[in-house]
Image (tube, rainbow, N blue to C red; front, side):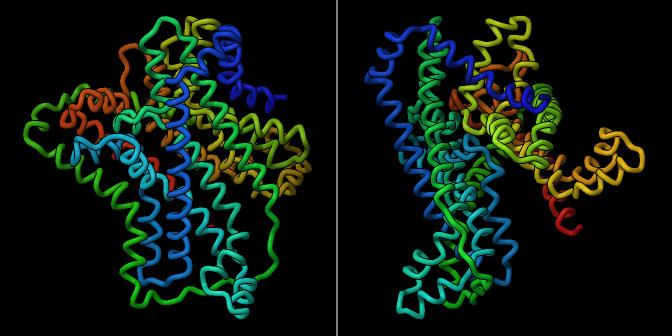
Length: 494
């Protein structure tokens, strides 16, 4: 029952959004959907998400193949560097590129920067799948006369396809929900339209209807991924393909691997530092305001991490120990935030707070709740893995020794699952620090985070004034990222 109640919290924004749109009436709903402007925003959104997903799928798979099939003397460093773009918010990458090229805008600019930022979402899971993939069928295909590429596609691709599709799902959802990058690069998508409709009118029904369109697109993507996952079967075999020396193409392989880190991290960070170190920028830094933004960012992220883990614990514990249709439904509802764009959750909670709990409107309570809905799936996954790794027999022995069920869980299971719980909390904290659209809509009056300060200045093309907040965001987000790496490293050693 507790797990079901916790999971139900994730459904509140979507349920209320549906209620709000039905109040507008079927006539207004249909009239809004067929407007040329709405159709154009929808087409732009689908085109960008499709192009970015396809590009990341191709580039990410190639990078994963290089990382696992080609041997370098600095293999671990290349793997680490390949993951670096994940640490940079898309709007921060866009800001860095605008520093160098102020006229950068439109579809192709958005496609390029977002592809460079999102490629690791495919590279990392596909690389892991390739390491465990059987090489038997590929070897047979090669002996039958097929070339390396045809043998890989016929024999190995079916084995790694689930990982590739899972990574592509993350890329597609990221592209659909992105607000900061497309706004900075002036490419109008549904997220841009939702924000414009919300800010420009006292009638917020159009914003709600656009948000519902975006949710439908996201849910269609998730449903498609689940359908394709069910159609995949495992391939027997134990041998794996050995890595071969880089040889004369080593420079080409390294260049391909470094494309995303260079474009997604190095270029933006160097641009950021170049603006930050300008004398005029250094003199203009408002230190008290910067410190206040850092404090707000850390405080909100910490609160979101604690609450998200507390809400995720009952769901994760249930999913780790039990099977069944009801358990699957509860877990799926808990993961609902995974498919909801931040701007949709923010808009839904604006409506919900004003109608149901007006005393909490524009307070930290609603903003933290939005973070919990959006990022609870990250906590559920990590906590579930941590609990599942603890043998149930340990809890049984503890209860035989006289401990109550709660005492046995707290003293044994929770302690052994602590690395997974901590990883979940850190993942939520990192995500909350970088979240932009929900924070813009729900932040308390007079409170600004590093993300919103960066956004407000870049929206006015004040790139020099934005530099201190961008640098601080990178440094602050590195703290949980470093802790996360340390916990994972310790877990592997143990």
